Image 1 (cartoon, rainbow, N blue to C red):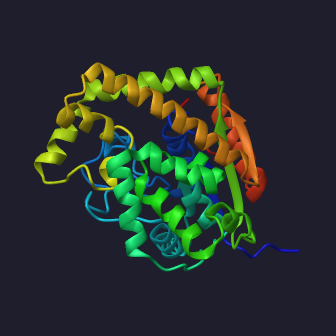
Image 2: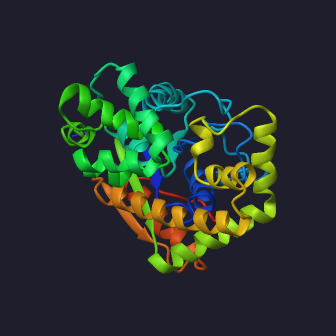
Length: 323
């Protein structure tokens, strides 16, 4: 039977595993346009802390959903879905292969399987009550409330992601069902001919790469980037400014936390984030995993990925990598 579904290529993996560099070579090999599957790279001016690909690194490959919003504009999984529903057919009509690259698991999975989210509405009074708990008792106290009723969502969400923690609590408060149970009940039938590649590597090596990346972010001027955002009026109460790298540096700039302590906390929180990412992706179906622990063997890792994609989409490649 001929599969008449449109092709969709996806590359996922934890932060610092090497998705960006590999994605460019894949995109050149398969004539792709890349859609960023990262919830933070949509924001202008938040470049260093999000490890955003720079124009000079794109090698002419079109990238979408990067630098499309200001930091004070909200961005949700529903908006990401809507954007992808528009972008994917447009890319296909240009004769290119749509290629989602990123580490925000819910965003990526919601597009791959066309999730339908229950409209539970909003309870502004409840939201204010939960926000007061976060303000007065701390983000960890609010997160503990979520862990008590929906441990799966609590494992996925960072305590600093207050908006999404509150939304998960609100869903349970209003519907009596958890966000995680809603996700589990999704049909998970894809409207696409999917090829999902997951990158993984030795855990300690990944943690070492995370720490090295953060050191490089500091050298590249992360503190000045956060200071510049503050100078433009983007305050710490914004969801974007609660992201990894920004919250910790804000604690240094506004609360007097020593920079060394802020960086240590950032490294710890990023390691924990990577662990949650891997946990999420391990529960996704249809992923073909490629172990890139031998990251110096870039050409070998690229060939392994290319073989999976060519087999899935039944393509015969003449592409030659420079590696």
